[in-house]
Length: 235
Image (cartoon, rainbow, N blue to C red; front, side):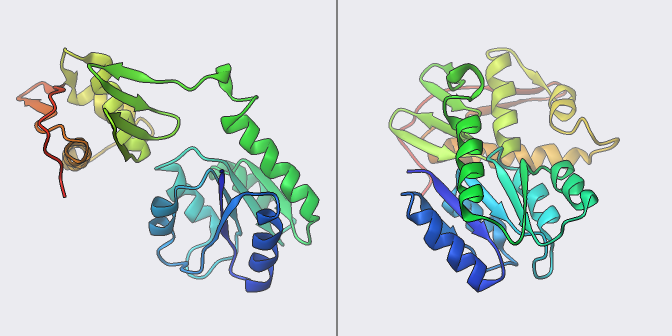
């Protein structure tokens, strides 16, 4: 069952959307914590997000950028703003579609179904999910998931990119400069410690599926992937 996350601070609109979408047999979550939105996103892992622009503290543009750091799931903005620039901003900040208020609920459902088909269904690129495999390790880049045997763990977008690079280079070394360029090619300068922090996070994800010492640090060169199951998992 596909999961739809509603981010709308008007409880009447959120409740109406929640009830209407549920009638079509979708799993629906209406967020009411607008300061820790990404915690809800990571826990729920929705297939699609309906996102208002005017929200407490941070606006929808900000939250869409945060989502795009971790996921490629469709994001549909729903807003009372009708200006063309608002729609341009929504798309430039990572949104996939824009619906103005007041809205026709049937149009909302049609757009939800359309985006789900494009992302996961009959219109998805290649009609087949891309899977990278190495010695029993499986990476699902589109769904941001890593599995080994019967164990699986969710990933962020950057964690996925790092693991994909390590798997592509295996058993060779993935250079630090190559990783930095792939992950942060839109930035002029990145603190060297940023990659170290992300590598540490990736190591912990491997530990969660029972692979200890998965990433070898090759001094002065980069990192090499090792796939050896230990039977131990991080609690």
